Amino acid sequence: MIKIRPSRPGEGARAVEIWRAAVDATHDFLTPQDRQAIDEMVCGFLPQVPLWLAVDGKDYPMAFMLIDNGHMQALFVDPDGRGTGIGAALVRHGLALHPRMTTDVNEQNAQAIGFYEKMGFKRTGRSPLDDQGRPYPLIHLEYQG
Image (tube, rainbow, N blue to C red; front, side, top):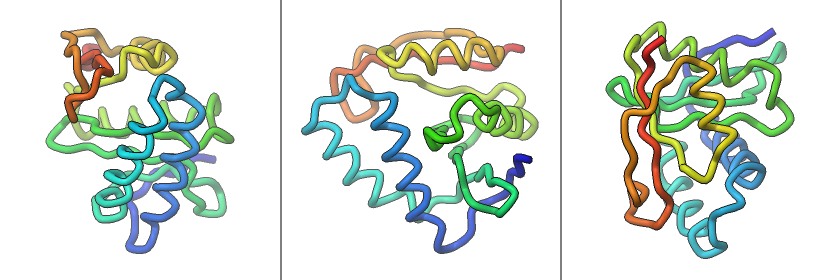
C-alpha cells in the first residue's frame, strides 16, 4: 500500500539515492560531465527542501515529488517501484493541492512525457535548453484533466 507524506529531517540521503537510481535508469541522454554536475547540484539542495514522499508499508521512501508554487520541480521513483502506481499516486496528491499543476520534462525522456500525458497533462510549450542552460530541451506541461 502506498502512503504519501511530507519528508522528515534526515531523509535527504534517501531522496538523493532515489534521484540517482531514477536518473541512471531514465536519463541516458546526459553526458557523463553533465550527469556529474547535476548530481553535485542536487546533493547541495535536495536534502534541504520539503518533499512529498511515497513510502511503502514499512514507511521506506520509494519516490519523491518536489512542488514549488504549483509547479512540480521533480518527480522521481526508485526503479524498483516503477510501474506500480507510485508516481501516479504522487501526481494525484500534487493535483489535489494544485489543480492546474505544471511541470517540465526533458524532451529526450519520452517515457516521462507519455506518463504525464496519460495523467492528463497537455503540452504548453518547449524550451531549447534546460534550466541550467544545457542543451537538453524541455517540454512544458500543464494539467488540464
